[in-house]
Image (cartoon, rainbow, N blue to C red; front, side):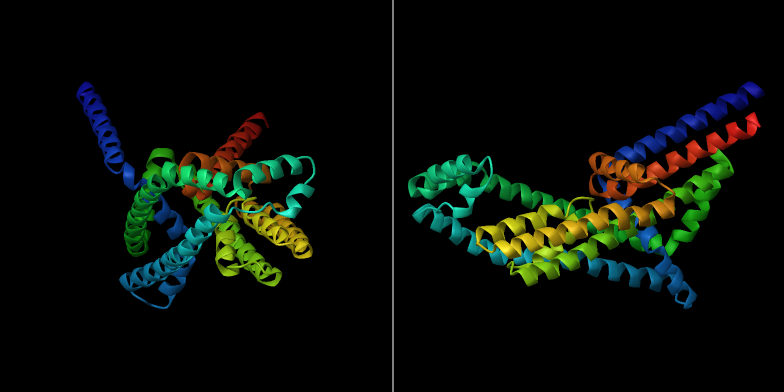
Length: 350
């Protein structure tokens, strides 16, 4: 009888593993959408709880929050697309003008320390001369613009598909999230005991703290630096502020934009504005990346700053953009397991 029971248990376990692996293989292309939906649901769950206390129905709450997030996520994409389409004509005209007349060497280029003379010589040989500029830009046009356009089109289609499935999954998580959490906790208790539910709580707290530390701080950096772009006279300050906010979600990402803007001002001979923008941007990014962000993420997850950085950059490299939020969650679970093991060893030794 025991042999029969053991064989049934082994067969059932093998069937469960096979079904899980088959499901993972079948849904692999939709994993980013599911992961983004889980991250957004965890981050905005306090809003759902607040609406639930107002006695709204679960379906109405799910629909309302999904529409709000759809508006927040889609509007910047539309804005970027409209701006890019509007600027594409000006960029094409600018390239045509360079091919026809060349692009004179800026005077400030020769004053750069160490590399100024070499860069100025290359600029003079390849861009200042109209024939050389025509040859250089002609190679760029024939070599990659059309393939780049096709690649961008495919990427945009993929991202839109992920966005649609993310919002669809998000609706069902808002509507049925409580039952899903209860079932997940029951399974975790059965497999791992009570520590399993605690590890899940650590992961949820880490995701919510990371969203606050990355997205909220990134938006604040984008607003502050966007105002600085307006004051310093950088064109398209709103678009650049939005781009700064997006890149600022990654630690040390905002300098990519404000340094480029400072170089633009320097090229336009606005030296004082360029220096002021560079100093202001450096101060804002330094405070955000070294004080505000670690405090928001680390205080909620009890993660040291080094673990926060490792989780963010490791998650970004391994899982893409969604890894910004999954990485710290994984680090929080790992550190919780470490601390639990250390406490048990200390109690055993005592």
